[in-house]
Image (tube, rainbow, N blue to C red; front, side, top):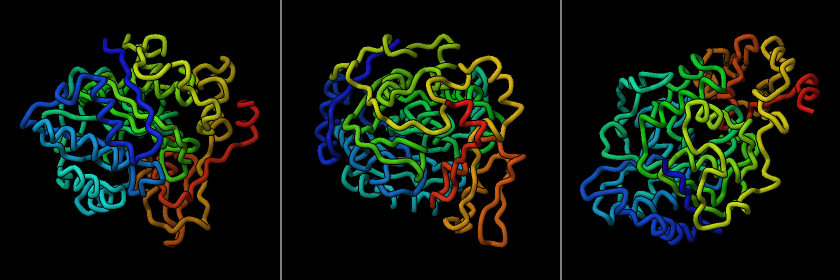
Length: 387
């Protein structure tokens, strides 16, 4: 078990290069993670084509700094990701993604490449506890190693986005909804993410928490939040434990940590993690705004038995309901493509409409809408239970 998480303070992205170097020096240097001639995928979080200031994606300054250091060790770094549900994994969408997110700029600054190959393959993973077959982008399959360059963000479905969740980007865009359709429960989805994290097995995970995201993340509806930290670890799980502490996210509200503990994985609790570089007792941000989909004080699994019993019977009343705000919707169809249940239609070419009977509350539509046109609305019953 590697339970060490290294943390440095980084007040702004202008200092990212210097602080990444400091972070890696604490871990023994970049040479611990790469060898000359190795192809290393820099797997950034590039959920959607968003400007860096929106805090939806890993900041280009962080990606450039890591790429530059890997190249100096003789490795061949390549920036790669597949955007979220609703985006086709093709060269045109990748080009727009990299351009908007600043990845071309990062690649130029570091003297490295971006991946524009839109091919992928189905791979067998018999070691998986829940999922034994994944579709994986070829950029990852052809690499000698992966660096997980994740972003500290809230997530309306999985509570937070960190290192474990960032691996979901190695699955090509329109293949992602299938996992939501087959695994609609948070516990099931978390189990899948743990299998995928084991398959990808990044050599190094670095979290961009200089400016994180709070509120209704992980997409355009989230709110940038200055945190001023950069974190790194060999263990993706340890990194997520510390990220959860920064947000003030309880274990009961973190499906990945709950399912990891059921598997006997460690660390899953802060007391099991050795934080190096800062005092772990001062990590928590007391007023970090968590998603409204989280019940106050408890996770859904920790509700009283009678509340757990009625949740399946009153889906509409006891979950947040995604609703389209017609005045903001431009009928782009991203939400429809992202929906794993095909519960969204475009009406008269002017706005999207969600069939609530088919909706499984995965919130992919809310996550991927580039126009913040989908609102998560609470019923009176939800507000009563959450009180």
